[in-house]
Image (cartoon, rainbow, N blue to C red):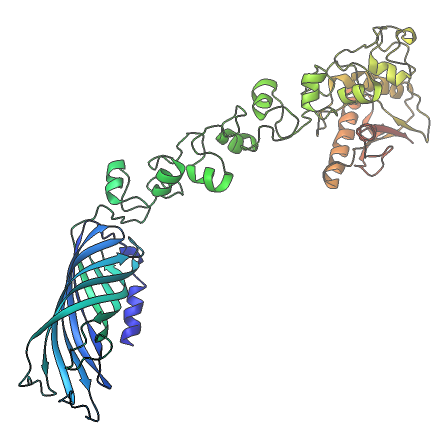
Length: 512
């Protein structure tokens, strides 16, 4: 139980890790030994050592080791004339120059090995500790070598356990045979350290206390600025300031930059897009490691600072053209679904009608592109225009049981806000209702299939309600109108294409 308690003590010393460099230490060890010689019976003896040593490098100490051993051996039966005594003890003192090799310097639990050389002086006695009449004090060589480990139990104190072999000459028991005599020992002890080491690291942050004093960091706190990174890692690995939570002042702590976002804690704008890492993460939700988060080929910085577009949406206004295409290819407004106000989305103009999204009347025939599309004329042929913008467009026919799509009613992206370019189509619907006061209609909103189905249903209903509200405000009796939402449940075209999705986003009159 005592051995178990000793080992537990060694393994619970993590808070007392110390360096031995530049420090003197004094140790006292005691334990048992076993003398191996030319006699045939071994006896356990006891002995003790003390040492004084100096830590010259993190891994090496040198010093003097001295000790006293009582070695025992027995011969039975006695049949060799050269061995006149059956029981022998050696009272042996030794003094050695020893080098210690520290295998885990600066740690609270440190294995070590040592080897040295010196002398041993001994005298033979019998079992009653009476010197033999012919016994003399003998001096011989002495080579100690051992392994062990020590654990710090305080800032200046450690305990240790070691096993060693001590080699001597072959005549310690009178008789010379083939091999040198030797003895092994197992000892436990306590060591005291004197002075402070230049390599001490009280908080185990990877910086010595001396270095921390020079840097003005806290030697008792492994993370002085509390940014989540140890002071030693900041200085040696990441080259950040251990006194500043946010070295590059981008609004993100060094710890979060390194551990959470993988950004460069020394660069305000890791991806070089013109937005600081903190602004990307905390304000816009963009990726601080990607120049172009939404993949529309405009950098996040240009989207925010130059074009005022949404850096998380490739098509900010939801008109079917990417922000890049609007800005670079077609010179239209990436924040307006209908740049020229002709009643057609920019995407529809480019992909479906082949008209110019920046010109309301592409063919210069006198009628807006949207009006031509609703009338059924060619917005690319000026000869079929009637002039006057919408003049000449046939009135909306409302017949009971019919279903009529109100082309040209447009909303802001993901919103029920009516766009200004919807006025022509809304007025056309108003005129038809005003001309037929007995007609009642369901105003039905539709969306494409992108997004959550419940959200699409709610959006389609709000858009239908917005059209109803406009007509009521214009003068139509609200009891004649019922707003309904269908979401994406009743498409008229495939949702697999941009054109199909554009057709599916619509407002219909279902005449009762």
